[in-house]
Length: 444
Image (cartoon, rainbow, N blue to C red; front, top):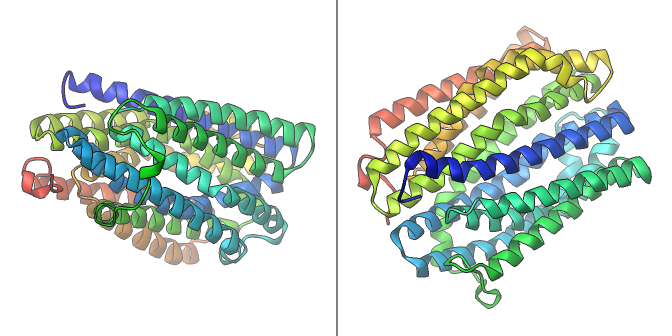
């Protein structure tokens, strides 16, 4: 990341992430198809209703580890391997603690939160069962993501890809076994996910114990360094809050969708699975930019960091918009994979036609946030998205749905708030001149 051709460095790092996210998305699609076709639309609605709630928990925990990745990336670029090792061991130790806490909280709070979301009675039973089983394996998901965060911070995006491919294929196989063969139902889908997450966590953690590099983990050294944890959390907590407020807003959006009926829930849930394809270039380049910028700041190569940021943002925007255009055109065909019910298809297509052509803005926001995180400015994305994607989005929906009580009113909230946050990010980036003044970035 700190030497050689800039575009090549970013693309070679982003490509495995892209492929890994693609595999994850194909699994999500397969999971929903199996649930929707082999069980029923109510089961599909139950799984769909859990997505925003799952990210409410997992998003905060994952955001906490952004600070670990930034610190490791900066120390790697600066050649300070002793501090890098301390950051990695502290991060892994905290990962076990945070994963256990998320598991306990998720299992305990699931029914209460689903009730707050206004989940319909015909969906509630399946949703509670699915979520509680999922959260039992929550610690595995956190440990896996923590280990992969260490790999990616030092520029290794290949091993997370390997483990994600294995996990996704295993998940699909177990889905077919538990649902199609054994007939366990929605519980089978959740159990398959937990087993797949366990395998991925074991593979990633074992590799960290054996890797030949400064990111190698020793079991006896896995402990919390209080000073290092404070530094990691200082950068990570804003990202965790950012993820949570976005998730909270999406939970409220989901609650408004729930107010229509289970067919709307199934249709919008089907669309959300397709929307994941737009996140392929978004996540790939956002993560690549965070690592690229942090390593080059550590190496004090600010011109290189700026050039990489421009290329990564542009690439993410173009990739997301191409996917959005394809989804806009073929939405009826894609949605029909999940359900044969014409009303379910109609709801999914309607949401796609409102949102898909604005994926360029969604990508711009996430890649710009990736650049700022790499520069240690994690509070800025938090503030922008708190204002636009939470406060403004919730206010708009609360008022607008009462005035125009149709589901399209809810869908409009997304492109509207994406546009506002894109404007704020641009103003901040140009005014502060991020990546031009070393004093504006995280201390090295």
